[in-house]
Image 1 (spheres, rainbow, N blue to C red):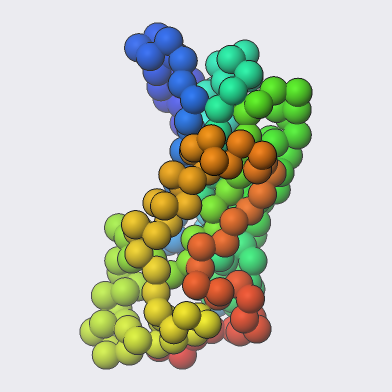
Image 2: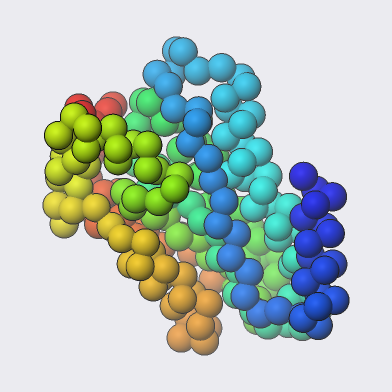
Length: 197
């Protein structure tokens, strides 16, 4: 909703006088289905919830950061953007576009000290992924979810948040246009059509 995002940006600028950190932490996963059963509506839902939301956030919050010539913008991507899965192609394509948005936006802020990066998070239990974790627990196969990573476990919200905190800090002052995988090595493994849960 562009009007809502623009209003939020104007409110934040008025209330705070400016800001240095922008974390676009959005996504949706209700579009998972075998490729040949996916609909255009599911693809559009994936695109709007993952890509358009991040684009609008940068479009409306970014100018104040550009004018201040300092700051860090962090986009939430996914290991699904780096590793193909037949059941999550729409989601993976959308998050791949988020990666490209991070790279393109980093160049759009060229000449300023505004950095733009993306976090490609892996298997972490959140409100968004709770249904998948519950399903695996109910089938007694939750261990298989983490078992597909080289670290043989799923991640924690705190581990993903630690990377976000790093990217928000001046410790990452020379990092921009990057996609940082926090996925326990999942994106380094051979892509598979599905995980047999």
